[in-house]
Amino acid sequence: MALSISESLSVQLVTAKRTADLSVPAPVPTHNSQQTPAYTVVLSQAAQANQLSAQGQTPSAIAAGLGISLSNANLDLGFVAAKPAESQTNP
Image 1 (cartoon, helix red, strand yellow):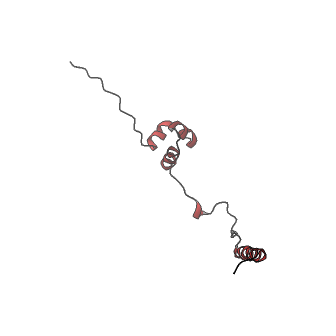
Image 2 (cartoon, rainbow, N blue to C red):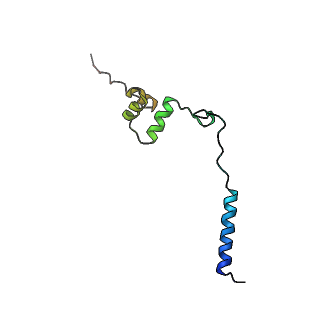
Image 3 (tube, helix red, strand yellow):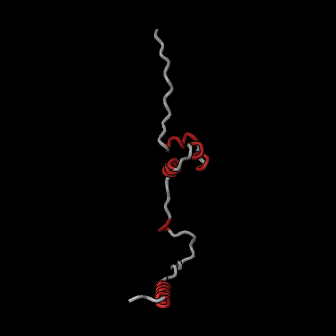
Protein backbone atom coordinates (compact mmCIF):
# COMPACT_ATOMS: atom_id res chain seq x y z
CA MET A 1 0.00 0.00 0.00
CA ALA A 2 1.40 3.37 -0.98
CA LEU A 3 0.99 6.44 1.20
CA SER A 4 -0.41 9.56 -0.24
CA ILE A 5 0.74 13.02 0.79
CA SER A 6 -2.38 13.63 2.88
CA GLU A 7 -1.91 10.33 4.77
CA SER A 8 1.72 11.12 5.65
CA LEU A 9 0.74 14.59 6.90
CA SER A 10 -1.95 13.15 9.16
CA VAL A 11 0.58 10.66 10.59
CA GLN A 12 2.96 13.53 11.37
CA LEU A 13 0.20 15.52 13.07
CA VAL A 14 -0.86 12.54 15.19
CA THR A 15 2.78 11.91 16.19
CA ALA A 16 3.27 15.56 17.13
CA LYS A 17 0.06 15.53 19.20
CA ARG A 18 1.13 12.39 21.07
CA THR A 19 4.52 13.92 21.86
CA ALA A 20 2.86 17.06 23.19
CA ASP A 21 0.48 15.01 25.36
CA LEU A 22 3.36 13.08 26.96
CA SER A 23 5.34 16.15 27.99
CA VAL A 24 5.37 16.78 31.71
CA PRO A 25 6.02 20.20 33.22
CA ALA A 26 9.04 20.56 35.49
CA PRO A 27 8.26 20.00 39.15
CA VAL A 28 7.89 23.12 41.25
CA PRO A 29 9.80 23.13 44.56
CA THR A 30 7.52 23.18 47.59
CA HIS A 31 9.90 25.22 49.75
CA ASN A 32 11.35 28.72 49.50
CA SER A 33 15.00 28.05 50.36
CA GLN A 34 17.69 29.32 48.01
CA GLN A 35 19.64 26.05 48.03
CA THR A 36 18.46 22.54 48.57
CA PRO A 37 20.83 20.70 50.94
CA ALA A 38 20.66 17.59 48.77
CA TYR A 39 22.32 19.50 45.93
CA THR A 40 24.99 21.29 47.97
CA VAL A 41 28.51 19.93 48.23
CA VAL A 42 30.93 21.53 50.65
CA LEU A 43 34.59 21.11 49.71
CA SER A 44 37.48 21.54 52.09
CA GLN A 45 40.07 24.21 51.34
CA ALA A 46 42.51 21.55 50.12
CA ALA A 47 39.85 19.99 47.87
CA GLN A 48 38.99 23.41 46.43
CA ALA A 49 42.69 24.07 45.77
CA ASN A 50 43.07 20.70 44.05
CA GLN A 51 39.95 21.31 41.96
CA LEU A 52 41.23 24.71 40.83
CA SER A 53 44.65 23.23 40.08
CA ALA A 54 43.01 20.51 37.96
CA GLN A 55 41.29 23.32 36.03
CA GLY A 56 44.71 24.79 35.22
CA GLN A 57 45.01 27.61 37.72
CA THR A 58 48.41 28.48 39.15
CA PRO A 59 49.10 28.27 42.88
CA SER A 60 49.23 32.08 43.13
CA ALA A 61 45.83 32.38 41.41
CA ILE A 62 44.43 29.68 43.70
CA ALA A 63 45.75 31.50 46.77
CA ALA A 64 44.18 34.76 45.61
CA GLY A 65 40.87 33.10 44.73
CA LEU A 66 40.58 31.30 48.07
CA GLY A 67 41.90 34.22 50.09
CA ILE A 68 44.81 32.26 51.56
CA SER A 69 48.55 32.70 51.51
CA LEU A 70 50.66 31.20 48.73
CA SER A 71 52.40 28.94 51.23
CA ASN A 72 49.03 27.55 52.40
CA ALA A 73 47.96 27.01 48.79
CA ASN A 74 51.21 25.13 48.14
CA LEU A 75 50.65 22.99 51.24
CA ASP A 76 47.09 22.22 50.13
CA LEU A 77 48.41 21.18 46.72
CA GLY A 78 51.02 18.93 48.31
CA PHE A 79 54.04 21.07 47.46
CA VAL A 80 56.58 20.84 50.25
CA ALA A 81 59.27 23.47 50.53
CA ALA A 82 62.76 22.08 50.43
CA LYS A 83 64.84 22.46 53.57
CA PRO A 84 67.65 24.96 53.21
CA ALA A 85 70.98 23.32 52.53
CA GLU A 86 73.20 23.10 55.56
CA SER A 87 76.62 24.57 55.17
CA GLN A 88 79.27 21.94 55.38
CA THR A 89 82.37 23.07 57.14
CA ASN A 90 85.32 20.86 57.78
CA PRO A 91 87.25 21.78 60.96
